[in-house]
Length: 371
Image 1 (tube, rainbow, N blue to C red):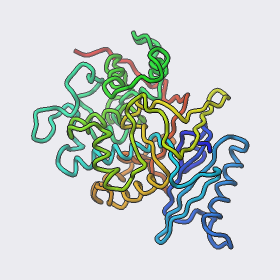
Image 2: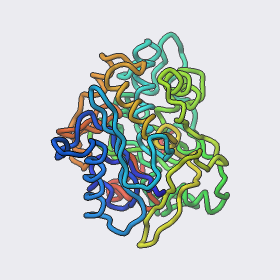
Image 3: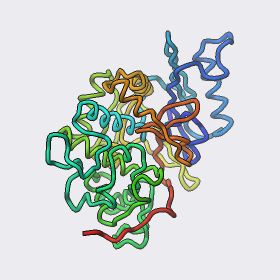
Image 4: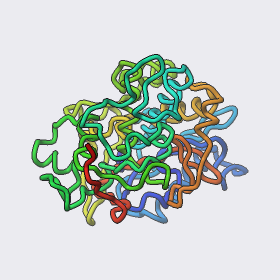
């Protein structure tokens, strides 16, 4: 079985990657139904046709879970795949991070319209550490809501090369690639480390609130806020509040760089970069805490999203409605809410992990460090 690290309902979004797309559907797919075959067979035929039309001969395939009011159907073009097959859900992690923030807001433990330098409710302690490692540009103006909506102007360490003019040994490189090459593939990245790259080099895209710029590092900051407010690690908080109560036994958020293998059964991962195919089944995802380190299954992810959108996952319906307040982005995301991507006919969050991914390189700015 093969899986590229991608989770996109819209196949056209997977430009740089070949692999398995896991799609949770709330109704029958367009073009299905009315035939003589079982729904899962008809859905499988649609998936096969789309895969062959775009990626014929490439490793990987498409997988879907179709949820109707009375039944759930599973279909896949990948031989041997099942609803319990593990894969890396990449940025679908952000739905859990956003839900964690909204749950803490629901409980009064934080307020999403507070600035991140402000005190947590009932405390004098700020949401983010008042240390040089978190002295990111415009820190005193950034709100938690802006981080959730990718409108805080936070430089994205995961998706961008570090500008060549900064005074750092990784200048002009992707930070994670540089660390892996110099310190080994088992290096455990931390939230402090990833955010520290932004703080040390004073990187940003825009002042807060001015524009949408997708930022994985913005969600690293949110994961840190979850830890600051809850007193637990991000992985432990999500485990206690979401994976266990919602019956997501096959979902985990590995944050140890040495934990690189997927639980069996799993999709084999293949990533295409520079015209070559690379095996990426086993990989260190400790750099993605809060933004892209989830390991899950089609069944678990579908259950999570269904319960989340119905206000049954712990976050109540009022908070989910706030998450679904979407604003235009001017980018391929079309519109974005609070940890959710919004399209005219779908609400979800995609995810992709790629060897080469460049975004907004011309808009990255290097600020003079403020004391």
